[in-house]
Image 1 (cartoon, rainbow, N blue to C red):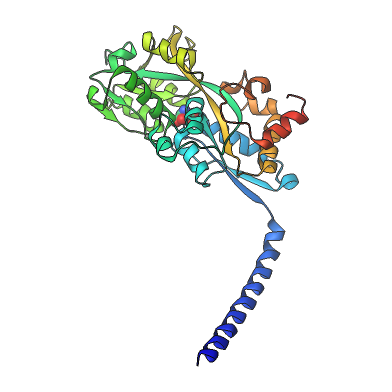
Image 2: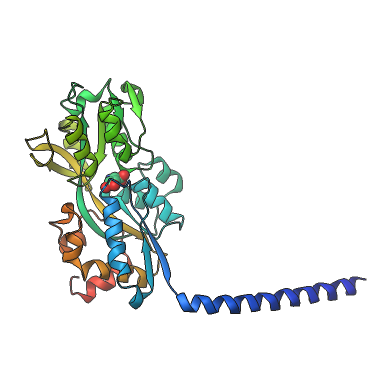
Length: 334
Ligand code: GLU
């Protein structure tokens, strides 16, 4: 009885095995024909600059698919922290993230989602991109002319997972503010906030973003909103104590209604990946960007002043990805 059962089992196993071999054989035929590696880049909202970064990189990568077989897509996402956590889970290969959140992810600090997971030791820096001033925009009728005036107002803190939300929470912690400090603490996505400001649903929108930003143009052109200063002793302290923050200025005249330079603090947009993503993949992505650097820089005005020398260093705290190092050494840049 038991022998019989065993031989039945064996027969079944053999049958299953041979049909799966047949299946694998037929599959490998079609895989060999396509043989592409599909990679994804996490970005941000569609009206932000991260989306342009991701789309631009993919456009350059996909021009060379026939040479390297890499196919790239860059979907819209919730922003910096969402991207880093998706890379960690292996759901995305690369992503754009603020320099402050790159720093804290490598250490497992400051953000609740990083603290619970601990240091992300596989996080890798690839290069940095444009500067991102922490930008506060207020309705003309809101009586908000400095960031301190936000207390008691209807403020959009942005969606959890965005870098902007993380950074405003750091600032709130320093100021001793909580959500209750505001008349309304909204959690709209970056792409929704200009409309909400113009519809008089919020008084203040916040966006850590490269300039010029489509969302801020929308708010300033359609409803007279103004960019307001983010300055004072607490900001000076944040800049002095943290390598990833610096002083930032939004140039006067860039947006309707804000003619003078506005001072704030800022971070840098960075491009990150994981040590688990193959060096060959990252090498080809980096090569696509820097071999076509003039073309890349033309894809958004915020990229105009970028240089490879700055991009290899500024705002990066995670170790450089092996594939990026290979390209930089090949160029004699390091
Ligand atoms: N810095 C923002 C964030 O991390 C995104 C800015 C953008 O999309 O350009 O959420």
